[in-house]
Image: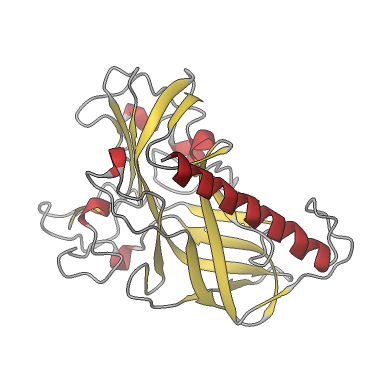
Length: 302
């Protein structure tokens, strides 16, 4: 586990070095400030890289993290995966340009991609898989881009499939509730030894879905879509990567307390465990809609 964590840290360091080098090559001061108006041209092929972090440390199975949430709690990870969809790059003139995802038959289908930061070892062995994925691969028209927008989750038209017959990556039962509620857009499972319950789950997904039962998909979109729209300025795929930081997401959460059965946030509008969590996703808990001030804290550009 220590070697795996070290390898992740080295990868992040190399990405940072590459970003600085690219910035210097294209007229930047290496600190996010441009020495000229020029942006490196992106396209037609594009790779968007993600890194899962817990503060300054990589998110990985087998590591103990301390000082998290409102009570400086200790945790270990059981799972760390999330879907993104409807990815757009922001052109220099403000235009939103869709990224056409490569259909690889594993991590990407239609306009949905799965980012997977668990490796199925240690505490992650119960629900995890050995395979991991930290990038989205696609294509865009060649141009200058200065930001990115994506949805954190699965769109309604693909959200209520049957994992037994759905194409990858929508065929994972661990990332699915049932036909009625659809997929877990985000699954972050944690061991919290100091808590009233020894586990704390973050399962973000649509709620308020009108269907006869759990084996029937809804005919209309769910009342609370809980599908955050994430907008990040200052992002260029040739210079930057996107950090998903669990420490920032948990800033308003008391991990020492949880409503049991199951513990943690299951995305219900009445779930008290979601109150301190949803602002980190940039979501209104009552409506399931994205907050207008783009105030999410989970993602940032590095």
